[in-house]
Each structure stands twice: as structure tokens, then as C-alpha cells.
Length: 254
Image (cartoon, rainbow, N blue to C red; front, side, top):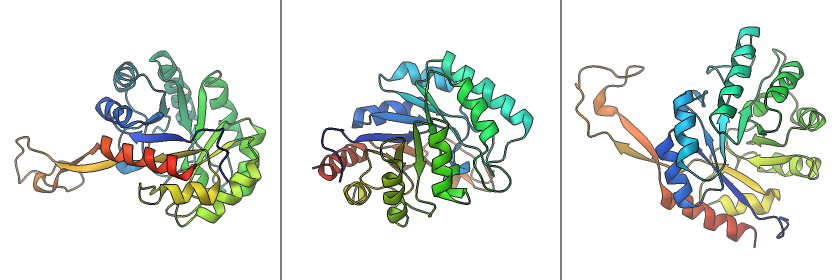
């Protein structure tokens, strides 16, 4: 069961400064700022980080991921991530979201140590690279040994609802030494069930709705990956969905 003395915290995934504002308006406690969510999120620009951090009064966590694809990092990518952490710090980010694995599917402890050193004094979340690790229990132990404050996970399954039993076991294994934050397909209609089933104290969600662009675009010219403007739809954070998630978490902690 969730400890009622520990208020449930809601983190909302966002992809712009405007989305940060909408998430805050809806009652988010914290945002995770990403670029290119079609790739699962990569590091946003310095300008985006600066604008987002100045736009809201809630903590902004910046994802540090130089590219899409797998979670194995080359030496140059590690250097880039260290530099991006320095930029995020300088632009006012509260913390960073990191995650790297070895080619064998283990937590890359060498990279983790370097990035934690770069992020010293900042909040840190290990992202859903964790869900691709070979052994989640062993990986959780590794993160705890390194003092990582938080891990985002769907329990190694496509969605939190499918991984809820694994997440509950991870929360129990953590025993308060690391925050196990469910994330991946969380919706307002089942968020309370996830809280009750796992005993989590924080939860991560998107709260997007689709908005078709009204800007002038040539219908015959693709804009990305073969998508033509007639199919273009921008996602935006819906404050009403954030409020519904907030309400669900209050119900789940009751």
C-alpha cells in the first residue's frame, strides 16, 4: 500500500516549453523534457531547455540521449552526454534523465558512473532503457549500488498495465532505497489501479491529445518519414488530462 504520508507525485512527459506550461497548469509536479518523442525522446536543444526552465516553476528533468535506437553508447556519445548534462545544468534544469546498457543488456556501470559524476548535485532518473536490461532485479540492485535516485519502468513489458506485477516486485525490492516510477501507457482511467497494485509513490505519464495543423503546407510534399501534410497531426499536452491524472493519483493514494 502507498504510504499516505508520502504524497503521490505526477511527472508528465513533454516536448516543448509550451507543453511544460500546459502540464504545470494541469497540476504536474514535475516534467520530463524531451525532443523527438517518435524516437522515444532525445536531448532537447539548449534553447528549448532554457525556455522551458524559465517558463515554469516546477522541476524540469531533461533527457540526456544523443540519438534514438539502442542504449549502447560510443565513447564520443558519452562525451556528448557529459557536455549535454553541463548545458542542462547551466540552463536551469532541476535534473537529468539518463540510461545506458552494455551490448550484453546489463547496466553500463562505467558510463553510469561518468554521467552521475557529471550530474553531481542534480536529480537523476534512469529511463526506460532499464526495461531492455537482461535482468531487471539485478539491474535495480546495480542502480541502487550507484545511488541513483529514481528509475522509470514499465516492468519490462510494453505497458505498465502488462508489467504491473513486476513493478510491484521491484517496488518491494527497492524498499525505499530508490524510487520505482511506473511509466509507459499510463492513462487517467487506470492510474489509481496502478498505484494501488504497485505501492508506487511517483508515476510518469503523457497527457497528449492530437491537434491537426492549420498552417499552410503543400499537400504533395512529405514533411517527415513519408508523412504528407494531410496526415500531419501535432500532439499537445492537455491540461484537463493532467488534472484527471492528478485526481486519479489522489484516489489511488486514499
